[in-house]
Length: 204
Image (cartoon, rainbow, N blue to C red; front, top):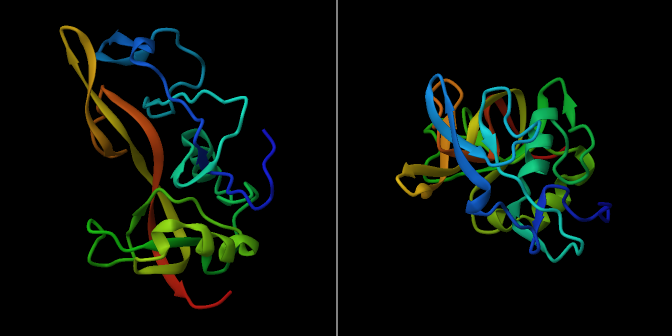
């Protein structure tokens, strides 16, 4: 689907639809039961074994939701270090890749160093557009960063618990780091990086 240049590539649309509970089932593995799709497809899981949410692509694009990201597009940008606005390679110089991050209640005391973010990087051209359009930046402390080591950290999403009647939602936006045991009932929707060796920049 082709988007206008000013439309953030990662932005969700009002017509985006996720999977129905009827599409989810129990898969039995050597490590025990885990959440799965009734009709599995290649690419449903990442290399860590996390199951990713499927989104139906609407025929009509709908309105842009600047406060939400499309899971597949967010994952692509974070994995490949692409700009969240144009999906081209993110800006990088000797000080690192370009990111914008804001202070949150769960931010580390060293913020922005070691901050964990789901916001993909940016190219130099689209920094100002992102600052202007992102609703979270209007009323929060934020910083433009150069990051030398944006390490892949883990995934977040909806947690399902297995009952005698099948899988049921128990928690949203739960974060599972790669260095911790996987949640068998995780349906991932965001990929996260930890920002290390951070430099705060005032201008580009």
